[in-house]
Image 1: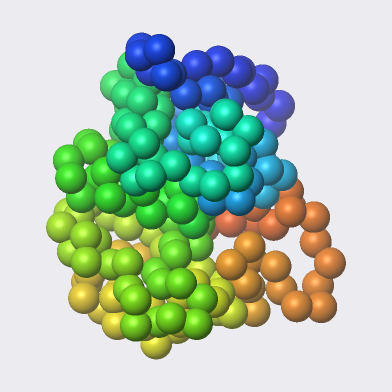
Image 2 (image 1 turned 90 degrees about the vertical axis):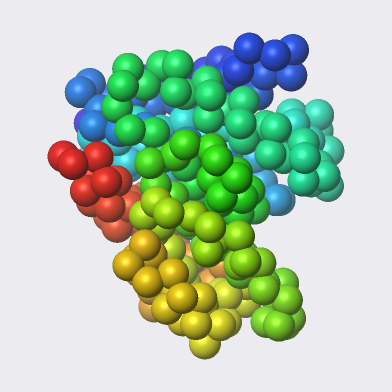
Length: 223
């Protein structure tokens, strides 16, 4: 499927976020995607993922946090990250024409999305492309307390070698979330879903995750 990508701003404030969206005809849902801490919305991984989601009839909008737009490498403080997420989500809601709007993203992008949803952002579900459950080597410092307040479905896609999500810690968190959480382990994958000894283009790696995320989004949308 060849669907044109559109670029523009999302949100009505002077700090509207820059974004790119892909909307296949008859999309059953929209998925808003936040990028990871060290790469913007045009990283090949996210581009590949979003383009592949169109094959499942899911429209996507990926956006840049304010610090990325400003050319800075260090993420903004949490309030500014949340503000960007709310700008993007509200902007997509305005163009979604009544279909469900989900939220998620890569690492930092997914984590901030979950914090916004825990505090009331009305996403229909969450899609995590590698949730940063704890800092590498510090599994005791969990970033999961707010997940317990989330009532919508959550999809956790994780590499089994992800240093940000020790398998035992992840299993404990998922057990506590019960039926709200669905987990798909990517065997041998690291935090970027790269598998040791396997050469793969980042765009292809991202596209491969749509095989799992696409059906999840369609189920949430009742399609």
